[in-house]
Length: 235
Image (cartoon, rainbow, N blue to C red; front, side, top):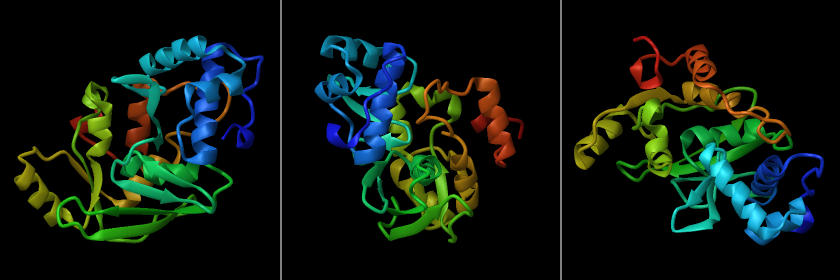
């Protein structure tokens, strides 16, 4: 993989070099780079790479496997484990971390004009696929259901992302909630998912990226048409 990914700029501090190497590795290959690969890409010793990965985990820039912290589970919008979505570009296949992240991948990767996002309805197992690009939302009557409110996203982020899914209809959402004993979260149409994804990760592949603070995040949610306490917004 290292032959296909440019080394991280050496004028950046160690944490940022590792962050960029993780993201560019995922973007180019669809896979999480290993500690030895990150060491080769950044010029850092493996133990320093591990230290920087723990720093990035603490800042929510990556998600590490708690049973093997050398392994990167997620670097949003990319995932190294299947969570319900496959995202196919011209030459690369990614696991999408959730509906939000799957729709975000073509918006983040400017060399991909569009991607094919494929999943199955969690309720009835019907397969669905959409061509998702940057210019307009995909067509369809399907809906997304997000289970976990934003204030609790990082309690268990893998569980959160694994339950941001696309369903055939609100009827399928209701059937799934009854079957699983879950409380209803937030339901939105495909256009709203696409608007949520379109600019959420802008700049993440560039040096100096910083995550949105809570105020800018809630402002963004409002701008794309979300509402209610689920998003930290008025009803």
